[in-house]
Structures are given as C-alpha cells and as structure tokens.
Amino acid sequence: MKTRIFTALLVAVVTLPWAGAAKEKKDTGPVLPIGWLYLRDGSRDLAVSEEDMQKTTVHLLQGSVVPVFKTKEKHGTTYGRVAALNLETGMAVLGWVKIDLAELKPVGAYPPDSDLLPLLGEPYLDDVTAKHTDMAKFLVRQAKGSDVLLSYVLTAQLSMAKLVVYTSNQGKYYPGAFINIPITELQNGITSLEVRDLIGDGSDCIITKETFRDLADTYGVNMVVRRIVDGQFQTLWQAPLKYKNLSQYNAKLQILQPPEKNIGAPGTVTTGVVTYRPIGKGQTPVWNGKVDFFIIDREKPLYSLTIEKVCPWDGQEFAPIR
Image 1 (cartoon, one colour):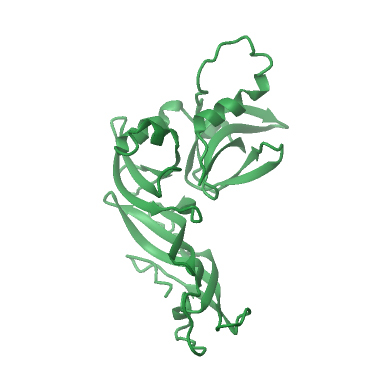
Image 2: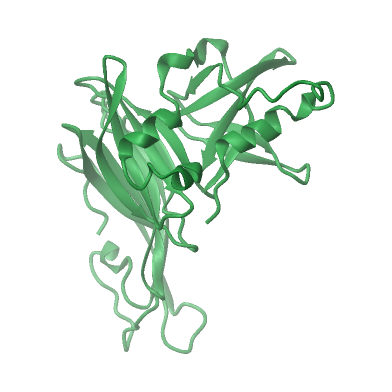
C-alpha cells in the first residue's frame, strides 16, 4: 500500500499556481493551515485534481476534522482548500470543498499530526516511519465529559494501522485506548469511518468499514459500530457488507433457520447494505442483504436468499446480525 506525505503533497500542489511568479523567492518551508474544518452534521464531497488533469471525488464523512490551507469564493459559494486521507485508497489528497466561514475553526483548535504522532512512541519516533505515516482525525462527542479526538494512523511501511483515542487536558493531548487494524497489500484495513449519534443519548458512535481475511477464500468487509465508554472502545454491533466463504462446501444445500444464520456459511457469498431507521431520539441499523449458495463445479449460485434484519438497541448493544 502506498501513502503520500502530506507535507510534500501540499508544497507541490498548493504552490503550483504561483510557481512562475515565485521563481526568485526562497523556499519558505511547508504550507501551514489557516484553520480547521469539522464536519459536525453530514458528509461532504472533496474535489481532487489528479496528475492527469482528471478530477475525482473523495467523500469527507461526518465527524471528520481536516486542515484548511486557503479559501476562495466562486459564484457566491465559499470553498476551502483542505488535506485529507482517502481511506478507500490509503492516499493523502488535497482538494476543494464547500465550506461556511462560520465552520472555520482557529489553528489552535486541534493539534497537527506532527504533535500527535510522537506521543505514540515506537516505531513512530523513527524519522523514516514518521515520514511515511498519515493520519485521519475525527471528533467524537461525549454526553458525559469532554469530547475526544479519534485518529486513524496509517503507515505504508507497517502491516498494522491504529485507531487511537486522544484526550485533552489544559491544551495538551494524551493518547489512550487504541485498536490495531491489520493491513496487507490486498486489504486496506479501515476503508470508511464516520461519527454519528445512533443511540440518541448525546454520545457519538464510531461507524467503520473494515476489511478482513481469514483464509485464501474467506474474506470480506465488516461494518462495525463502536463507542467510547470510560476512555475505552466498546463494540456495539458488527455486520458483514461482503462475506465470501468458499473455502469449503456442504455436500448438499442446507438452509439454516433463522435465515441470518446462513451469513458467512461454507460455500456462500453474502452481500449487504446498512440503512438506519429512526427510533426515539436515535437510529437503529437495518441490514438488507443476499446470501448466494454455491456447490462444487458450478459457477452460478444454486440458490439465493434475501434477508432484512432490524437490529434494535437494548441498552447495551444492537441486536446481533447472526
């Protein structure tokens, strides 16, 4: 997996429009942000220009905290130049996103990566490792106590990424609970992360899409809902968005009851999507999916089963998917 370095990317892209006018000026170092953008409600599209002059769109999801380097107005709309980590590709990107100037937080509102990374200790104290490490930051609101800063730490040279909780005290940040996220050349670890109040109690949930691989023919993507309780991660729910298990087959077609028990069964390919249904002040996940059953020497599924599973909150967790 390849990740770009924020500093190099920002210097190359941000200074490009003024390269001709600044030929005689000395290098003043990396471009520094003018503030931060925090997406409290909803996601937003980030327009990124590629090297071949093509434009792509990266989705900044709810809860994201990204540095803003400049602003401009176009046709009455304000845009901010921001840097972000594209979790789907593991690449650092720079692009333009619509903002309201009232959303722009001061530079001192959140710490830069260079302040947070050394707090993790080894191997991030190594200069080469630090140079090839990128972070994606998110704000997690808490009903009781101060909000916490969540960071996804991705390093090209390591086979493990980290999801780290940072707490602040008198302006200083301290790392706390963390989760190691396996990554390989084929598996990106976390490919999506958003923060929203699912339960309706004022504390945010962390919703991630995480790749997994058990055997050569057993792999997929799980959606995981967590929250932070007393400084620790608590898993509330997990469900597959894709679950391929063709490492072994049943001798004959076997449909289990209730239907959700078939998810991930030997000889099956499961695909699903998750929506949210309002319940009280919060929202409950609804899993809609299909399980295809295969037998040996047959390319097409022998049978397909569709499932809708509503997973209400019981005060401790959402009802399990299977």
